[in-house]
Image (cartoon, rainbow, N blue to C red; front, top):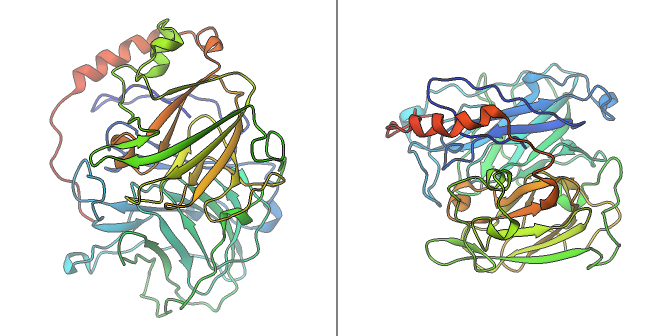
Length: 409
């Protein structure tokens, strides 16, 4: 995860960071206000020359990246606002007749070829039920982590911030087939087309379950193979008080100075702001988080942890714990009221790492905490670059009026 101060309008900034051996499907986005809902986002793919699944596909390139997102015609989207449209690869149609003739995105495949598609949710809020008419999907990656190839399924449910790679064998007769991303918020359907396909929506779809995904390598969850087999165990209850979201009765308030800069400026751990939303973690511990919602509003919440992939030892869609080979990923749905997810990770990456709902209006309304990991080693290992001193001044000088509306799609 790479973070920086804001870019000044009209200027360019160079972001330099190490992938540190990572490969897979990712994305970039702003976390300032609701900027990523307004379009500050896009896909990133790190290709693996030693991909363990390379024998399963013939094509994997920028033409096989599929992005899905909700789209709004207003800035600073209030929580719960229905989207005006769903976009697939940046194109879509509204429900009204004003966009009836708008071209939709098209993905071309050649009969007999095998394709690795990278499905990336850039969503502000909605989760999607994604399928391709007449074709089965074999999932091989979740959130940048290779998985054991699944049995063929009809569809995947993808939450805000999540990514999946799947194999598609183009074995069907030459024709046009709908690609569907049906959101949870309304009965809106967006599809790819060249000439409108005629394939009907199947009456039922077999979805891949998160609990059916397993890591391709190093599958065992950290810690002991038992429910409380960790060094640090914490439960978070998600609630809503009418205006703000809360985690264990505390609502996240973004501090005036980033937590990392507070640490690098010499503050003690007890002085970090915002108080009540900071959770200190010791070095080289196995951490277990149990996350549930006690309020039905706006569930299910997809939670994302910066700085780590984690093992999902209990998915919201399952009643069982898996310590042997749970999926590793970095965004997990905690399900609805009465459901919960349990994750584990090892504190081997010193720094302040936010853990937040990836429905952006929920984050803006307080649905987050920050884990300060291995506090004593953050400052010695992260000297402040001289260029950082210019960033805040540039940001303060950049504040100006914004347009009241966005381009329509």
